[in-house]
Image 1 (cartoon, rainbow, N blue to C red):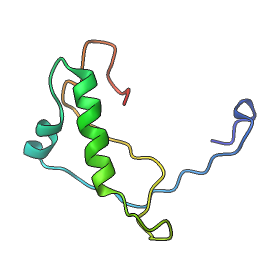
Image 2 (image 1 turned 180 degrees about the horizontal axis):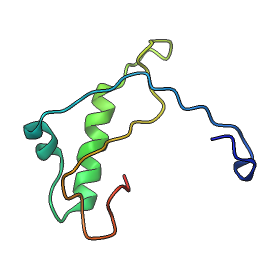
Image 3 (image 1 turned 30 degrees about the vertical axis):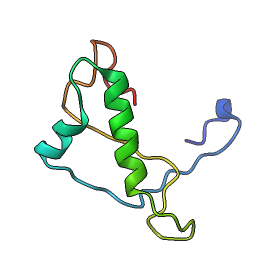
Image 4 (image 1 turned 120 degrees about the vertical axis):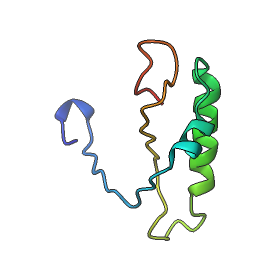
Length: 79
């Protein structure tokens, strides 16, 4: 992500990957309710955060990838 149009250079570093089972994943996503789904995913991601800024698994951003219906057509991938 070193594109001049951004005005800054961004380095993306994967510090941890968590694979959720189907049951946990489906419990976070409410079909047809993207606002609630986003709220659930953000709450879950916050619970995964390490409070110590120097911890090797502390993150700045969390990315949640799913095959579940997250919301209305056209909303896929926006979280």
